[in-house]
Amino acid sequence: MQNYLYKLEFETPVHFGSDIAGIGLENNSLNCHADTFFSALCHEVLALNGESELKEFIKDAQDGNFLISDLFPYNKSDLFLPKPFLLTDRKENNTQDEENSSALKKKMKKLEFIPVTKWSKYIDFLKNGGKLPFEPEKFAESELYSKVSIPRNDLDEDGKDQDNKLYSVGANIFKDNCGLYFIVCLQNEEQKNKFDKIITSLGYSGIGGKRTSGYGKFKLRDDTIELDYKNYAYESDKELAILFNNTENPDYFMAMSCIFPSDKDKETDFHEGFYGLIPRQGFVSSSTYSDIPLKRNPLSMFNSGSCFKQKLEGSIPDVSNNGKHPVYRYGKALMIGITL
Image (cartoon, rainbow, N blue to C red; front, side, top):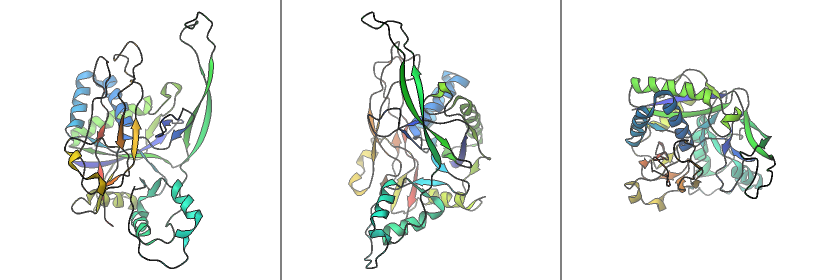
């Protein structure tokens, strides 16, 4: 299995739903979770190659022969990792430094992503305190767009005319030289060639919400990079490859994708880890699933950035609910090693 890095350069605004349950379309997230991305890939495989290819694509993922990360931001000079859910025992520090200031506490609360080239310094900062070794980056501008919802039927249940309704959608517009990247783990060159065609086609369809309004369209930025810490083009690629290669005896394994534990994973002592949970729910978008809109069975998943003492496997549960075919929620584990 080999890890590949893909960078997406967005040509239109993009909307990803918030992790907070009950938040409307006005709010959106900067990054895209692996399960959302996997769903978009499945729809594209079906449109391009039909149902038999889709079943093969899903089976590869179920068997662990295809793994993907969440989508995280990049800028002109660096790649960014999710802030780890990690607490460490700090050494005694009697100096008056920035760690005791309210400004740093506010900065840390808002901090979401860590530049990979500053990763070691950030881990040292967690252990020893001091000054945050970088300034938080802003990758995109958030905009609010007004939309009109037109009712499908002229009359409501009481026979009265239905009015058009106004609503707002939040979207991100990425700055120049900024976008989102992801890591995919593939078996061989044949599988990679197939995936390249899928991801290129998906760029025209778009990812995230409001694709019918033209949101989420992208193109690939630069060539695909094979992660190799011995043979690399940029320092950020090297540092990321080192983290993926750190699997022998790290202190923790950190999730690079949202994870739904497998039966084997449930034997893990999660109390030894540090993690965040995100709710995953919503309607099934397949036109063949049901004659009326139906919701998926809701579940909670470990968020990317969650840290565990053991490497997890993850799973892809069926979250269908009285529909005509299975609906799979991607929850396989792609992890890096953290040494404290």
